[in-house]
Length: 331
Image (cartoon, rainbow, N blue to C red; front, side, top):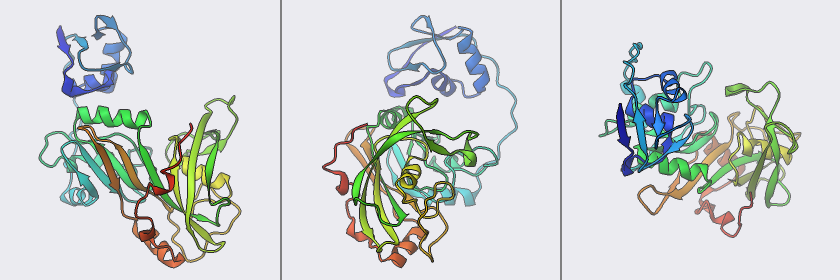
């Protein structure tokens, strides 16, 4: 038996993930069995895999199983390493931020083998440990994606996203011009029948009593418009639901240009790219080592082209957070 006191530098984490860091050779199935059968104890008591543990708590571990033979994974190619490193827009001892491109998934899924999570070995730099994802973006949404460089940073950043102690601003081009020019969209949403994950997932309007219903709130402001053809929106998700911004834009009758799932009756302006025009422009949140992390991501090429075609000038929005400084979000 081993008795381990969790150190201050390990931060707060789920028990199964803490054990995975301690024994990376174990499979998730082995870890869950050890916890489920009571062989792992926290402060002398049984625990669940999703219970959170933190500094000062004492974990008792049994003799651990030997490693399971697994096929060796190929090393990251030089091309892939150069690709993922070219996306870095911020790096310090605790945090890396990427400007994720349109079309690159954050994590793997059915028939998805190329994704950010599979490329993280290319972002070790001088470290032995690869960074960790602390949130995600849809495959077709571009923009700021924040990574933690070690366990303590992952715990701090994960808590910030989980507790909504973050500010995220998205830029979108939508069909038509919303009226009023600034407002708040709120309502209940849930997964559509038959929706599971990956490309099949889709949300629909529902009522509070429906199974899986979640409340979603989005603030928006029109930054510029091209007559009745299209508008440039700043969008602030007060809650963080699946496809929330895309769903809300279509709900008010102004779907995001290039969205293949959430549409409206308004025509898409001609001559624009068919790619989704939704970009995570800026993120502001507490830095794991103190102070504030504030990162902005340049627009992707297809949105730059659409801005030029519609006469929008991104230099007119120097501070992405400015439209929402006086608005107190209500969840």
